[in-house]
Image (cartoon, rainbow, N blue to C red; front, side):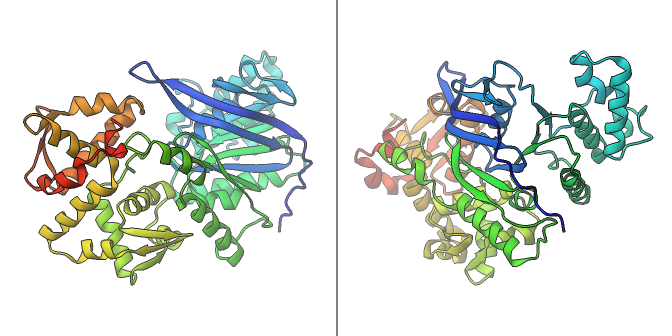
Length: 452
């Protein structure tokens, strides 16, 4: 059993009141991170865990000095950053190797940029290559290596710099299950060595079990914009057993946080509810139907971590479906448990025509963007509008890419419920006869549907 390092509580990197915004296509700004406070201490492994779009990678890159904050500051050993963090090295998901360079030359890149003498550069690179198990492949090119071997080169390229903080952006997500599990184990073995020069590891992940396996502390990020939602210590000795009750308890706790409502932003959203503050989760009707069917087959109740494991899903695969099902009132979620609602049961057990009616009612009542589209079509002269109308308005609150995703999801949901038709060639949305049933419901002024 590997005893955890005793954190010295010496702060290495500090982010204070950090906010980051990027320009949107319409000239406005998109806030990605909002008032984030993070401190990375010597002697710990920290995981940044969150759903897609929560700003995990942006936060990591800001701590590394690769992205400058819009507000607030980042300090390394007490000194404000003005450019790349001299005490950090990055490992990327995509390996980011130079294909025309050999393994050794790739590993030497950072040392070359730092002006290290050729002889010392070679000695340190070969030592790092040997340390991560690629001895004998010094003269190989990336195309000759498997994905796992290429990521080992990425590790060596970062470790050869002997950084205080090793930063890793989903380094195992592009690898197969066995390779990623093996590399996680080797990373923890390196970390346990008393002469390992790196003093802190910060890893971005969307995999809850990976966070519990690796981290001493998990920072859970909320979305829209990204912020620290919770901080969870993982007080388990290494190596960690996935089957132990304490491991499962930690996983359940993180699931409960990720699937719970975002209390920090609830008051802010309640003040201005609508399509720009309540985005549609990235879930298709088919995906929703599959999730509801599975929960129904489990007697109307399921444990989300067990379900994810059963389906071999990552949290990013499952949680958008759970969020969409909860938005539409098909599921209730308490902690890590999901329960089928009466509406969910009615939708699943109905015949195809009635199930469409149930879905249409729920979508208009509970999915702000779908309700907005229906109301706008009702108020148009001929019951028709171009998709560009909604696309341009959505860009007030989303990037161009996210606005497109929101519109695609709304069209998918609305077409399934036969609320409107959509011609992909002309880009025209046309109100259906079914939607006339919702005229009374949407005729009153409603801030949710008036926001756009």
